[in-house]
Length: 197
Length: 197
Image (cartoon, rainbow over all chains, first blue to last red):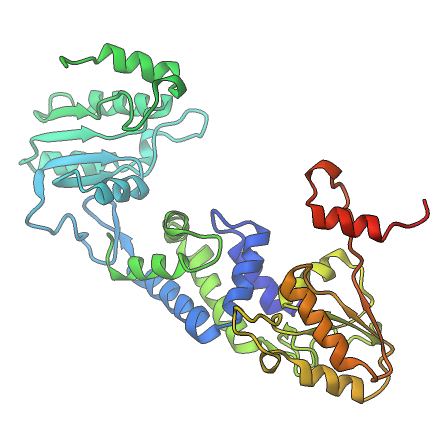
């Protein structure tokens, strides 16, 4: 329908997360209606981002600057490193604007089933940052999943004796969370970690 | 987060139908992880489609060939024209593979509220095709909405006396449609148009 150019465009759009074949067709049609206002700017933005964006050599964040904007920011506490699985998690914390230190992006979590071992994570870079000195605290901000927890244990093991304080995110009832819809694990963790009212 | 290149990419992706800011971020991150396998091919496909795809001068379909693949196909009945609102509707009919003739894409329907008048539709091109001769039937395949119905009336009026048979899509119960969930208008139309069992 409409020749190979349209079909190729739809096939590539359909590979984006969140777009199936149907919405890829809608997106292609919308753009074809205004090529100069949408298609060519998007093509340019893709090319430019592919050229400019690289992992930060220090923390593995994705940025067009290296070291990344966060690592290079003198206002961020370089002695406080928040370890996250992915750049998506880093972005979530930055949107919340709740962390005043820097980050370290592991690039995944250990997973026996997924075939992810320690050599697949950016652990040597983290150890090198700690060995440089000046790091007071490493916050393990990993997912509250089995793989996230076992990765946190592994990291705690490897970083023991390095002289930095190791902490984890608190577990409990999420903001706005109704107790009746929470899973048993969350309820148990919230009860165990109860605090004076 | 990550510099202006990433922010610009996310802003443009978020303008695609079906992608909000959240899924635009996910899509950008997925692509940034594999720039050569995804970003650059998509950039090339966008540029190529913007360059190659044009409205067919005959039927207003979007295609990289002009006249479009359907108008140029000798196996399609050139005497049978199916009038649709949009290329999206043309694609839907082509996917169903139920129409053996050609199409005419109006580019919208008349809408007093939306400020769409006859001059905004590709009506002159349709009349020119009919004036050339050889057209036996024009099928009005417009949406079963108020604007679609008034556009069909307008077209019927304008094409009267041109010697072609004017038909419309049947209205009734959709395949797999349970009666109890159908709206009153559909039930009334299905009952009015009842046929021998």
